[in-house]
Image 1 (cartoon, one colour):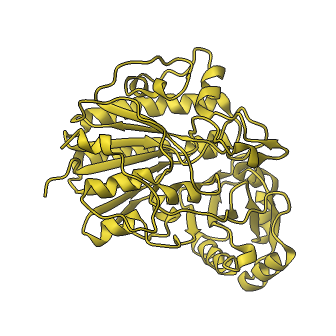
Image 2 (cartoon, helix red, strand yellow):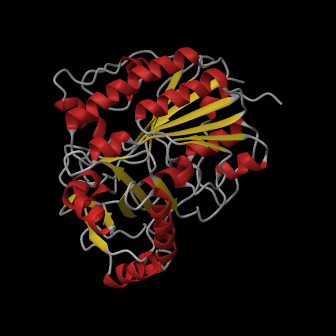
Image 3 (cartoon, rainbow, N blue to C red):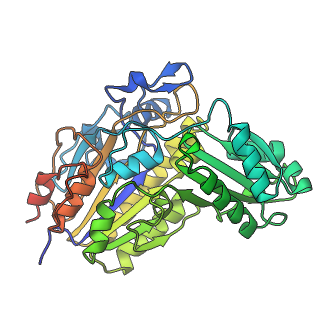
Length: 407
């Protein structure tokens, strides 16, 4: 059977939100609510000449917001829209899971203000055999400067968290070793299955270096995430023989559930290298799901506005490169999983709508679409594209205009 699009590439520009949600006043960065946040717009306003993103501009991003440096254009080969989040949250797992149809009503546990309970830390020490140091919310690079030398001296474990629902454990590759760090993280994941301690992810954060001046995290990061509560769009694709090709941390976010193929990445550039390689050389029918995390981890949480803007500009160049390699029946969807406005108070994510930029060489009637009610419209569209029925317990409605254009 012929489908409108043979290969669907969904690229998540992690945290690149495009305007606060109507309920943003219920979500906070410290004492300041997320009402008024807008990652894309506020970054553009701080860049000396606005954002230089000619490829996304040509695809119609200016229809979505007043982004300095962009202007409205005719874009017959692309549809654009904003999507709202139905789920109760503003984190990585909630956003990605909703894209694949899962509605999260109870947000995952966070320990940003207090650190983890003594009972949890005591159990982790007893079961791993390592002393725990840290146990507070911190930047992953900063906490290595503070505690890395102590960790190496005592072969202890640095435990820390963030505004996300995560328990992160850092240890030196040459002292503790990656296998031992992974073992300790598996113990932490088991402990954190208790309802009162149930974080979304436990993350192994190995590092190298001799002292605080040259410590560096490595690509041997490993996420132990909760499995989605129900089968997702990815499971439906897999069960029906379609490819689910994951690039970046997608495989970890879904704990391998519904994943057919996965590739880890060390940077946005590496992620785009691998994605463009898939476009050029991997003939498949199904979904390629990509996460580019550096927008969030390197610039959003660190409130590096100019760095974030320059990262968006580099990404735009790679989008142009990818478009040139795409086949007639390929579809590209560029989106985000939440906001992380680097001009906003605090270091937390921001509760925002996300962009939907949808391009194919075969699209002829591209235009602006009305705002979508759920990130789940992405997954619903993918299923309908392949003639598959969406399970009733998954959220999302297919974008009919996008599919009708290529029938």
